[in-house]
Amino acid sequence: MNNLLYYPYINVPRTDWTLRTLLYYDNIGSIVPQEYFYEPERNYDEFMLELVRSELVTPINPLDVLDNPRKSTQPFIELIRDNEKKLKKAQKRFIGGYRGNIHGDKFSKANIHADKFDQEIFYQLEELGLAESNEGRWYSVEKKTANNLMNFLPTVISAKTDRLATTDYIRPFYSRSSFKKIQQKRETILTSLIPFPQDIDLTRLLKFKEKHSDLLEAFRSQVELIALDSNIIEGTPIFYQRLSELTQRKDELSAKMSESKFKSILFGTVCGLIGAYQGIATASTTGAIIGALPGFANAVYSALQIERAENIFDQSGLKYLAIADKRIRK
Image 1 (tube, rainbow, N blue to C red):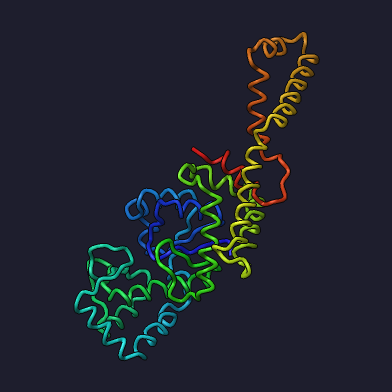
Image 2 (image 1 turned 180 degrees about the vertical axis):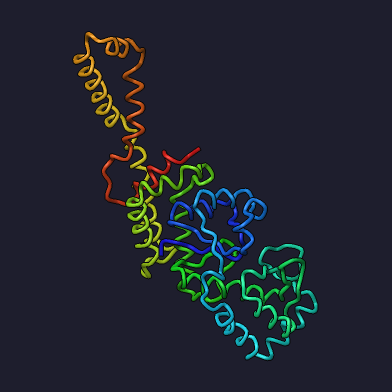
């Protein structure tokens, strides 16, 4: 899958993980309440607002995605009811103000916005003694139940929207160990290959990805060949060997785009073009002005050096990062 669904929070955080993810995947989706669509400036934090406006993150209203929100959430309620022993423990935790560890904050219960679900599910959770109405459209929900509920919703929506549900903080409760290992392996690879995310200019990122979508696909293929290969286990010599090969190739490409041989060829081309132009326009004022400009050839050469960096031939899939390092830094 080339698109992600971020959870459990609304605002995608400004972290290295986010910026690496923006470089690697086509798009990140985030589940948001309906009011955020009408008053984005009032509800999103500054970074998230910039991501949404740049179309790097897509806000998703679950009530628009789910054909029947009430029926879609009913299996979750039935799962709670079917285990009476766990239900009683959860009720006691809720009464006692059970502290969760999703965000490590000082609140004893998890706040969930009503717009993320059909209202019926909150009514049923209240009936089960696991939730209570809070300020505005928010509900306090027993922490463990809230964690599971906020994992359940992205799982359903990600399947409906063909996205991979992922988070930078907690592991999905529904994930098998093999899925976790693949995710962790992929993160390790990306962290090693993309060490410069804090310097990324978001205003250039979308245009860069659109222009070089073919290179992004080639890069993703190389990463996934390692991430999805069950014979390449993270932490083993073969894993580090493959990772080292990718890193080395990326560095070689970055260096090749600036090496002296490439510069000499380009500089000779620039001088030849300017000489030919002056030969055609010898008697013209324009030709005279161009010839008289100090460092004109150097200026043209520098401009073309920037524009032609991507002309370097590559079949390794790492060209995407080599160009990104030059194109989208601040």
